[in-house]
Image 1 (cartoon, rainbow, N blue to C red):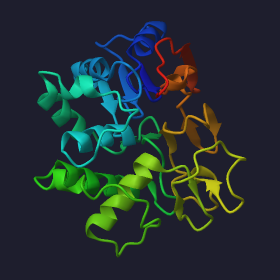
Image 2: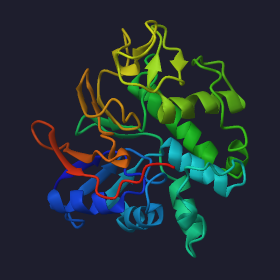
Image 3: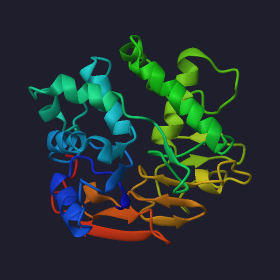
Image 4: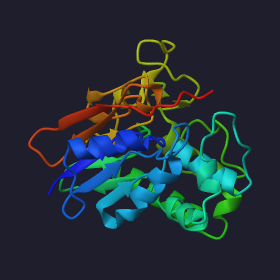
Length: 276
């Protein structure tokens, strides 16, 4: 029995299949954690969604920003972008079942026995792990409610850029969801900067990767995340970053979490499809 976490697949089904063959994944015994962004930009979003859903409890996937974008487009709350490649999902006969399943994925998964917490992008430095889990559950309940689709009409935007307990309504949900699905950099006070996407060292001097902000309060767990393809594989600072740029022609990476030390395995992304 093994537990593996995998970086952003984004519709790259052939690479996913190759990676699972490489780690000798057995769906009867093993468990896969996906860092989100199962869909979009790659060529086979529909195949990836169907496969991961078919694994049932053997797969845990958190919501990523591209997953949310698909749900927003399906709800009529966002327009297609020229780089979107999920029309196969929107035209599928099982569209409703797949979108319902996707919309019910969590924003955070935590396993205290293993000592890992899974998110798509990051945690705000001022959040404890317990607080982050509670806020993730709060936002997920809102997305799954009868009013969930209406939120997609208000989801987009970079403000508010910081957390405080007095936030409520749409602004509260936007901060929570932006942190879990879009975060890369913060200033030293934990205010989000969602514009800069380059690797560490290219950011403005007042910004830090979220996981290096002093006094980060979630250091009681190792946070596993994706989202940041320019960061690449990162195993330091009490976090593991797994987005190794499969979509961009680099690799898809998995890490075994139940071993004495994290064990990394990568395969070339043979079906990468560059947007445009």
